[in-house]
Amino acid sequence: MKTKILLGIAIFGFLFLVGTVAFSQSTKELYINGNSGNDQNSGTKEQPFKTLNQAAFWINQANGKGAITIYISEGIYGLDATVTFHPANWHFTKEQRLTIRAEVLPDDADWDPGKMPVIISTMPLNFKPNGNNDPLGGTSYGIQIETNHVTIQGLRVLGTPVHERPKDGLVRRNYPIVREGRNLDDLRITQCLFIGDKHAIPNHLAILASGQGVVVDHCVFYHCKDAIVFWFSDVPAKNCEVHHNLFIGNYGANIWSWSAAEDLKFYNNVVTDTNVFWILNRDEKTSFSLSNSLISGYSELVNKGGGPAGFGEKADPTKLKLGKDVILKKEGNLQVVEDPTNRNYLHLVPGSLGADLGAGLFTK
Image (tube, rainbow, N blue to C red; front, top):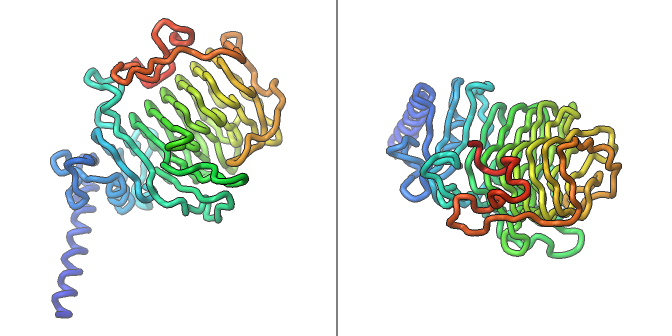
């Protein structure tokens, strides 16, 4: 019996190594299909994985370098545990990236909103951000990126079905996309639709990113609490961009520029019906230039400080340098397409105010 057990372990180890070597020498593409996939498959288009966790497991165990693309088919993907990409022995570059993307993208001719893979977090709220216990009632991470040169593209990202504020001082929350590494570089999130509902499925903070080179473009943030937080960095986070995004009805704040450097580029964005537009770091040392954007309907323009349980206090509005092509209207909501069968679902009505800025999922 002992001999059989040892033989079984040896065979399993051999197959695991063969799989890893085969992956490192292949075309470096992995496929995920929530309906027809199986995590015992090889991850090819013909034999896709079922979960994003399995794709992350393979990449984290791989040895080598070069681009890897993960294709996610239409379907619903419940994350019952954080999906962490943290490869120790696979190296990416700006040109040879890790790309996590929908199989069909918004600019494709056969795309419609129903083809977007849906990501929803269902894991327990017991994650420890940066290894620390959470004092506010519990937290969870959805997709955690801990490597350089990553693109996330074309996903429909929800929050988690919890009661967000059970009592004063508590905020139970999910962060769908996170990067903790303060020295990491080059994370692009593009053509993603972030949707929440504070009563049913709060999307507490769509993107929480530390480090350098965070670029968010052509995304829609609809009824989230907070949209984008530039979190921690050992030095001010340079080469960051926020452009061609649409922020609609967010009940927290849209941009938290805590760690961002002054070279942050903010252009061709549209914000409507929001609570706080922008939150600065508490020291207010950094100013930011905004161009070619529309902010219409907000309670507060600029605050400072804050955190998960609050939005800080009023800040110096001159820290936002508004270009002449920035339209600022404290009152007034914009026209949004609410027909779910329309290709422009949750975008501005064509021809209406702000639609000419190109904010939203489409790049063409």
